[in-house]
Length: 143
Image 1: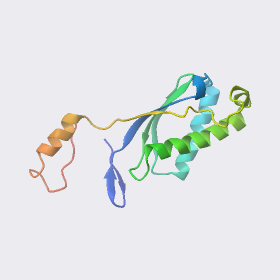
Image 2: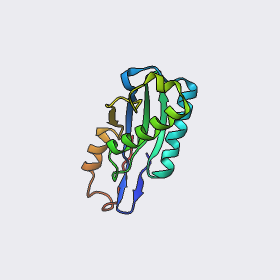
Image 3: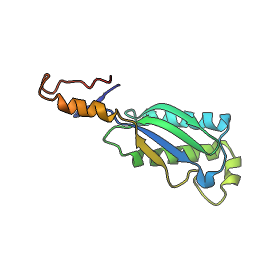
Image 4: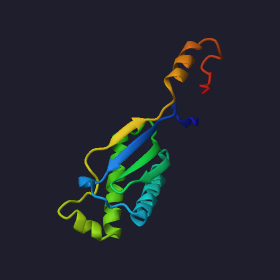
């Protein structure tokens, strides 16, 4: 497991995020997905603490495993992602303007997000051994 550091925080905030397309339209093929993935990586240039660990797609939704710093909410990340990819995809692929005529977005309003975290037993053990190791220097160990 990899811990990240900010000036006043050490964290491991990894999320599984699923974003369906508006009306669950099957718009993703390899070309559309490749362009969307490139736009996503472009976003991380402007938000360096965000790290895309994994990304894949089905025809009408995408799955991502993303590390998001505690200074940014999951909702903020999703808004940034949707706004930037939607605009870029519609410019690059004119057929999307026909699929989604009358609306600016290609993404559904909702999304799924879940922490991937470390398992409960590791946390419980870490809490139990507090005070037995160097103060504040104990590391979580996954067994």
